[in-house]
Length: 454
Image 1 (cartoon, helix red, strand yellow):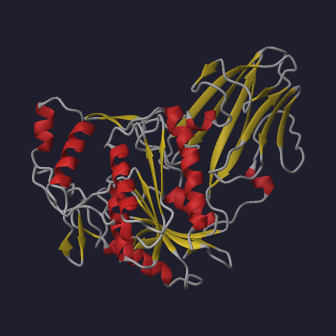
Image 2 (tube, rainbow, N blue to C red; image 1 turned 30 degrees about the vertical axis):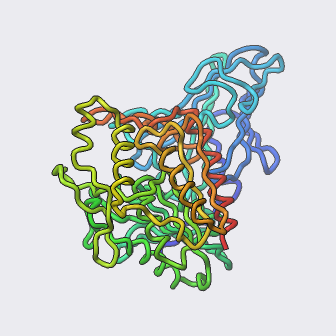
């Protein structure tokens, strides 16, 4: 196992880089003094899912000051945001209280600079944190012809070991280096494949959860034994990850939770129905039924997405729906809804028996999801759970102005609303501000849910 560094000491966490005089404040605050100008970034140590506070002092009264934030993603691409503020008559700006007069975000939002960052160059892509224990940021304040910068770090892993899993379980494991692990978690991504939830898995491990960021198929990074298409994926890929974690030190008798996003919610929920070790399930933009697989190149014929015990899991037939819907000038949501209603009426046997999960469930979704009708899907899940009179506490929460990708707090939202691929734009729904607000609330709900599972 390759162990990564524990949380660095306070002097490392807020590293100051500037050519002016530096004055360090009390242990909880970093101060950068530029003659009369002062920039504060607090607290000095924080996990990447926690807010930071940025303020400026020493600006000329009622004068403008511009802040720019910069960081770098897993591919080395720079992301930047900026905001211009008018200082108070005392020459101060507190981002928790002040709305910018211009910039990449609007309104009062202390973390607005973080989620409104824009990709500076390169092919449009989602923001992913670098594969390291902390991500470096640089904030620059400029006013009256002076510009000064400071670097600080957002911690992804604190007291966590990371292990690459290359078979029979694939993905990346994050293991708390603590005497007592709270539970085990398997994170399952959507139809894009790979293991995109590494940063979130690392943050959960920092809070005491043994976590596997599962790779159940990977088109871009093929490995022997790992499927390259979302076709005939064994439900056992999740169950094997649970077994792997059960055999880790300190995991005996611990509960397990699965978290699945979009198409990955199908796989996660199917596994939760099968395993008595799984004591809770979280669906992010979830589906109550199984959809067909996604072969590359697409043949126009339905194929199975998931298997169990070597047999195909029944799925909702979709052949012809896309062609007929597009011919009728229907949007993606209407096509999905039509196929969904048809599947339910046909008694296809493709419903996921979520009511058989041996623990509580949490369904989180954006009310403006434009990938598929998440509101309809979650309402169906709620109706089924109520109809079966479960004794567990099942919850569903929808977020206004939020789309399909709104579950990671304080990360850049650009491209998570609409992304321009060479083949054309894809609309995921929501707004940048709406997704940012929803992400904070959804992440807190996930943490509360995990803490409640026994």
